[in-house]
Length: 64
Image (cartoon, rainbow, N blue to C red; front, side):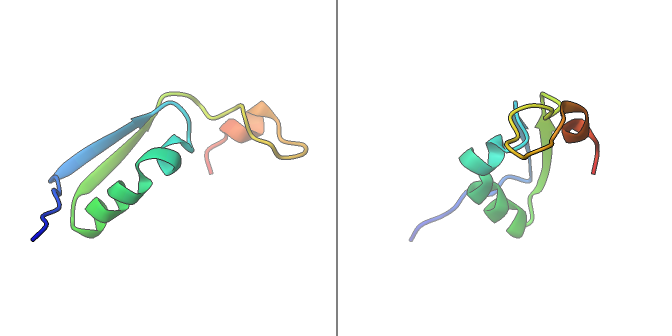
């Protein structure tokens, strides 16, 4: 029998907005589904590295 650890809460700290999707998104989604509280902390504004025609740094950093 396999057991899967589920924390009561967790904090995901990444440098860029899409880093979690490329590293831990599956685990975090499973934890959330099992009832864990999760907070995300982004250490940059996300204003660079977006490959979209016409995208400016200012627009990329805006809150949705």
